[in-house]
Amino acid sequence: MESKQTAAAASTTRLSPFKYSKRVLLKTILERRDGGLELIGERVVIGGWVKSSKEVRKEPVPRIDGDHVPGEPEPRSDVSCVEILQSRIPFLRTIVKVLGGGSGGNYPLKDKLEAALHKPPPPSTVFLKVGDGSCVASLQVVVESSLAPPGQLLHTGTCVIVEGLLQKPSVLQGKNVIELKVDHVHHIGIVEYSTYPLSKKRVPLDKLREFCHIRQRTTTVQSVMRIRNALEFAAHTFCQNNGFLSVQVPIITTTDGKGSSEKFHVTSLFTEAGEKEEPKKAVAEIDGVSLDAIKAAVKEKSNLLEELKRTDSNKEAVAAAMQDLNKTNELASQLEAREKSKPKTSQKVDNVKSSEGYFSSPTYLTASGRMHLESYACALGNVYSFGPRFRAEKGESPKHAAEMWMLEVELAFSELEEAINCADDFFKFLCKWVVENCSEDMKFVSQRIDKTRIDRLQSIISSSFERVSYSEALDALKKVTDKKIETKIEWGASLTEADLSYLADEIYKKPVIIYNYPKETKPFYVRLNDDGKTVAAFDMVVPKAGRLFSGSQNEERINILTARIKELGLAAQQYEWYLDLRRHGTVKHSGFNLEFDHMVLFATGLNDVRDVIPFPRSHGKANY
Image 1: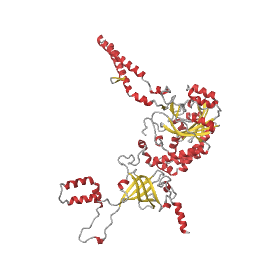
Image 2: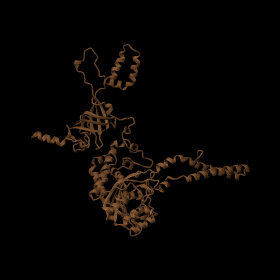
Image 3: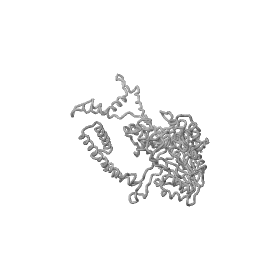
Image 4: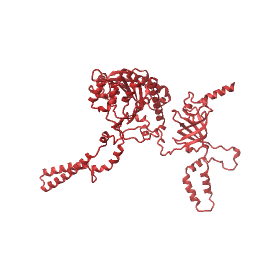
């Protein structure tokens, strides 16, 4: 009976390897309540990367009294001597070569040096901290030097696959409650330590951005990416649990869903333009002189001519200066004419003919998918999309990258109030998910990045959000005496990020939902309110994070939508498909978008969006 209970107990603690590999994930060992103590005696194969290491030399076995011959000097350990000799091998080999001289002869010193150089190093034990990316914690791995050369194992970043028994720590216990005693080394992926970007500890995040292919080996970036993964899973879970269907919207589009000119053109003609651009540099130069230089020369020679006229110089000098100026002006005119005749890439892209370009009309990388989502909401009811969105804004900003991910939701048969309620629930769901499912990573974030981060997430879950109209928000800002923000804001102006943050951080001290914006500040498709001045749009602003959600009820009345397109001077033909949704079975509908990367920033407490995007693209920087 007792043997059966023992067998049953063993079966409950035995670890199963990852389904598609022979190794055991460290998370299944280290994130147990007891830290893995119940697994002592289990044989496992683990794989990961060395995060830190230490080598401990074994002391030589002392000689017993019976081994010492009276009258001879007391023997001493030669370990330190061997170590010194081996550390100077290149130098000593040179000495040996010199001592060897010609052929023949007896060289006792040479023989002794050769013996010392070839003497095996003293035995040692290597203690490795190994992580495999599945959790914050690392496993202490113990490897004897007889199994693998310590020099191959000690460098940070070395990849190892090892097999052995889990046991209680023998030495160097610290925080470790369990370690792996290795008896077989399957693989060592050595590191070129001199060029490895993470060879130094605590590399700053801004420096890590230069090594996006390597920076995920750091504990900080690994935690951020696990939190990002959890948030993405939570977003899909919320939508699926609440009856939303996932729809993939196009990345290439002919419409501008944001009403912004900061767009990326998509065309197959850029390559052709690039090939022609190099030879055409000669058009802007003559004999190596640029148009700007010639214009500067015209100005200088004009000043000289005026000076000659003013000082009553002789007629010959004035005539020569006049002739020289005329030639320079003629040269400048020729260059300007050639410059104007040179085709511009932007014009060629916008006026592309079907026979020239891949598409029959100008196309762009999408900045928003909500307009396309509307067509599916008007057929499936409730839909959402998760994917990259693109803005060609120039300049450096901690809150912007050229490619950012966005989750967009569209609800048929709903008005602005329902969209706000959905965004409220959605945000709280995400915060709760991170707190409950990323406990170890959030502990690390609190220790390393922001000690208040868990409290902030928990306060969101339990708090009620302030809801104010644009006019009320404007009045609140005008009452502020703090000189840090601009309070002379006229009605109709857009609220800046600084304005929005001040409302949440200083005035209301909680998340704020601002609604009913002036129509000039929002896209053309947002529903016009009865006052004719405002539209049914909202922003959700969170303390220490800024704007995370933006949404609206969209205009379902075709006459008003057509008037707005005409009013803003948009190309009506591009929006005929969008107007068709109003012609054929229209319905009230609303939705919102979540700037997903900003949500990751809020959850982790980081400040720069480039630190939470796996491979960030920003102005002038796309190296991967």
